[in-house]
Image (cartoon, rainbow, N blue to C red; front, side):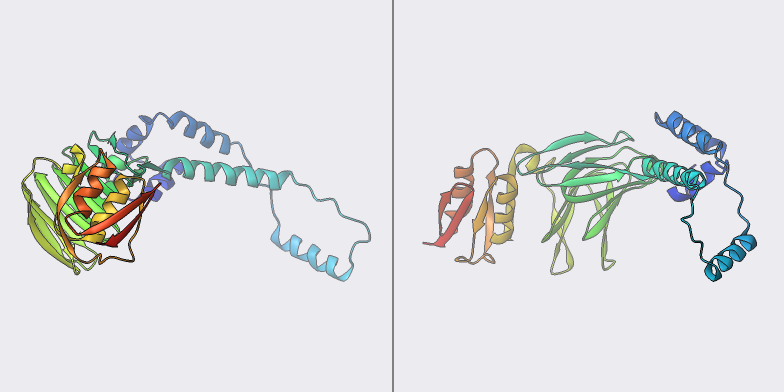
Length: 301
């Protein structure tokens, strides 16, 4: 079982010290034949001999009696060394590069992870994970919002800038924006950890969000996140957060300096029609707006 870090896996493989189980897993990778050819090529390189004492003596003589003519330097040993270094760098790059998925404004994306777990990314979100040996250490990095359906197996961890979520066979939603961190559990169990080591364990129909650096409990009443149905719903949320979500779902930007973004909003909007969405949010708050292309200027009535 691959239980060490990936640098150790690579070092052991290059030194023929991988266990039989780990080697069999490596051989299943479609790129294994390419890696094997690179290593086989490295075996044909022979480092040039090097006499340290003689080289030092020669260098001192040259300092005392500089040669009058230009000296020809043989580059073949150097080229050998460069080739070896380049091959090793290539192997490391192939092993440790990451797979990254990104959605743009108003876009959603469904994807399947190597272990069969599924992820649905909301708009303006990024998810990444290691390309190889990931199934033995299931960690994904999320910036934005995503809904996960995780297969059984080893621990599954979602890392964000504001905290981590660890799960084992469950369905849950993670939302991490610059001013938001919210988790909802729809099936199974998850453990939420913040950067300052606050922890909450959630089961089905439970959720939490971060407010003033404290985890606050919420109830989850729907069967799945509303954003999957093209809707956003808010309950006593600062208006600024709602405007941010509108910008994420529509290709617009707000001019907000004339309004109070801290006033609380309860309600929602859909993702199908910008005019209806703007009316749903701004009219109940007593805010006028003027749309000019992708810019929306706000003012108090």
